[in-house]
Length: 479
Image (cartoon, rainbow, N blue to C red; front, side, top):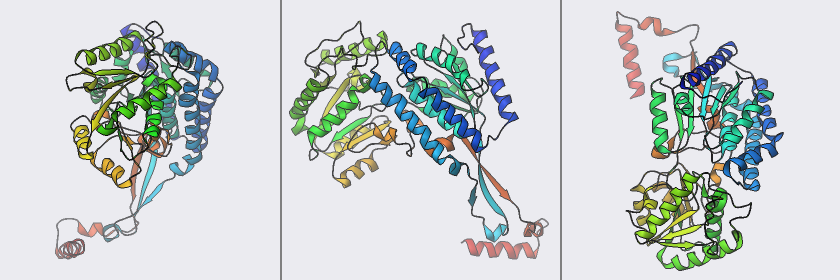
């Protein structure tokens, strides 16, 4: 199946053709049993594990340079482990659930919740973790018994073409189809009448996707982004906090939607924070041209980061290069990690998600000051309090709403298979991963089984004394 498509009419034709084929296959087999779903999940795992080198190379080609170790950790190992976890629990998830019956009205009846496949699910995948995000979502889709069409990013061309080549060896096209972005594909894709549409990307594009989906009343899961804060309690070991924050900031060159966008450091520790950050940079990024230092995805993103740095400096911010003063390699699209201090509200870095190796540092005096600042802005996709004081951690968690939380580290709540992943408000809606992913891709269908005998026939109009007595008794019981 050739899914590299160009002209608008050709885009519509191939996309609708794929959707019709998948929907027909779904209607022919609307409820795959456990064995079929398990086979699909294991085929998904084989597609990944049997082609690791080709996938790693394709992703690196799309980036210009992507650390092999980062790809193995974030794209291969985590996804494979997630599929194994889903297979382990799937039979339990698929079980019909018993629910309580209101015996005062419906004695003898039964209530059940039956997890059933929705049908055809559309996935719109970004470039930053193209295998992790596509395969982890496909894991939920197949666990729930659905079929999937996947639109990949224009920045993932090498990988997309590889997946288009590999997919037919593991799945029929009416079960799984990948599509390359050749211009206009994403817009047409979002307008298809899917049974569920999952989008991962920017808030601006997410709004457009949601508007398109609304025309078909297609439900959506939106995984967006935002400016996720870390907060360092002055009583927490500062060196440990710096190491953990900068590990995540350096990973994938900071191009992670759940990355630490900015960090609150107590005013008394700012100088020590900078010193510890420089020490980390000297140890872990001595040469940004090394193959282990991932490139920025494209020239436009490089220019965006350079403009953000220039804007900050021009308006009075202090930039601290923590990679030994190394200069950016524009040709290789590599930018050394930078701390950005003394920022003001009129700077670009305060207003937009950084999505790169820039870390804004804000000073604070009290927890309430932190809470007020974060709550005055869009709800972030993640929150990262660093403290050994459980009461303080709980205080931040209770007072600041975010998509997810990692305490005393960053990012790793996303790697927990039994935790749902998702944003809130401007950072997204809906969840997947684990059981929540299974539920999100299922219709949890309520079914009431009426008993052989029911007193309801005695309560039909015209209402008489018997109905009065029954309803008065029920009122007393329920009040």
